[in-house]
Length: 479
Image (cartoon, rainbow, N blue to C red; front, side, top):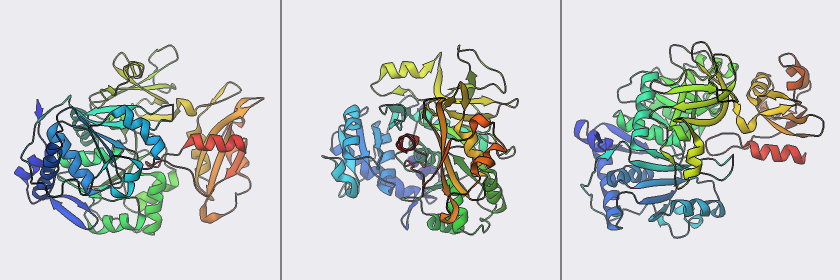
């Protein structure tokens, strides 16, 4: 089956419907189609063809949207690079991709020598009518993993992966004609690209923001008809703080919350403000969502069941499939799973077991098939032979009224092998509260109680809001 560009399809079916907003500007499907056509013409003038690769260094910008769909019309692969990386960190990624063309926003161009300026790339170009249809197996992007387990690898996601991700997500969340997604996640990450493609396939609108800003987000929620959003727990809390818990408009349907468990008090605040907050678990190699709570079955404790069309299983140390309630390695299978790692056949083989993607995460399924993610395999703490999952400790500490956010990491210990250390960010810049150890002992076995509690003004996070545990482990060891 050949798949057509969703912007061209939208232009034929609903040309005057809103497709994109950014920085005070708006584009209908007809207007967006014309902008995409100009970028196609500019790419054709550079001699790019199907299978070529383009490296991009940019924060969220309308030009990224134009480029993404233009590349799809030519079958050219996009390799978006993390805008937070230094020139030295970017260099090996560019070498891996071997792009025919490099583009960068003007403010970032010095970090990508030889890159053309993205904003002016299509200046003067006439709109091209070229609009090739794609096979489901056609590569669309190379997305580099965070590199928390070694050298970053470029996951190859296809047109079919993105289409399946949108279809499976809708099967879980329920249909919403012309959804309006709030786009605050970076477009160099699978979460941002998934929102971009999902809205286009469904004839909706992406309300794109350059960066996370709680005040700007609340204005969008109140005035732009936003129906869906994606947050992590800390950004959800900041949104609620900024709006002083005022209810959101009735048009707002739900928010996906990724990046780990959400404290129960925060979920209660969200519900009181009319936000249906659904916890979700996903990864780059599976084109974002793997499991998500269902709107009519929210429990606030799990990441929900696998999306319709996806399968999740838990495996033991000998490769045996484990039953409900048993902890083991999480594996995923389905149409959203990547084609492999770019130029890394050995890493690709290691990533799969009999057609199942090895996530390197630890978790369990309950009797109803809902997934609980306990830890990254690399974050697991083994203290005197006992397994400790940081998420469990973090959930207990996050419930303390003086704690705003917390992260737990393991550090080497001569007696126990490893011990947990908790980094704590308090509310309103309060000093570290006394009695945190006693608070933990009320809910945790003694061996799980952190050996130390260290104060921080804020947790180090990457562009997607995930805690950079490697930084914390180093700091804990130095301390």
